[in-house]
Image (cartoon, rainbow, N blue to C red; front, side, top):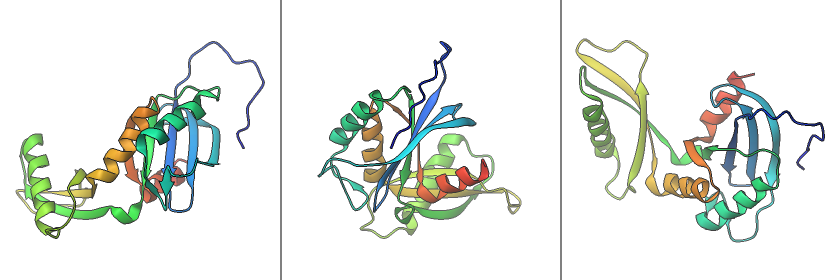
Length: 187
């Protein structure tokens, strides 16, 4: 149930974001106000009752219809979120630690990481998206280590389409586990 405050609102514009997690058993939605890096308060959070045929066992079957449904749903609330943080099933994300020569350009790093990760995946693996960050542990001289996460491109693109058709900008698509850890750390 969505709880709405009937207190008068100030005219100052506040920023709000949506967190959407399409899980295997349920679809959860949270709307937060504040900045993307520092949410100030939870506007509302709930388990969504979706129309049949949009989602099955955590997989979005109809991204356009789900996005349009979500837009209508959000418009019924007082908040007008702009960004979406989208939860991806952690089981479909793989984690890798990759070492590259130090001093590569950002484009070369992205290219090399993609190539290195794809070389360890099976031939029948789907096309992937990668995200990476510097490993904070010490690296051997002349090398830089990266923490790389991969997910099937199709799963990432489906969630991005949901956000787009909901009228939101997909700020982040991240593993459900990472989102939960970030939420724990912000308390």
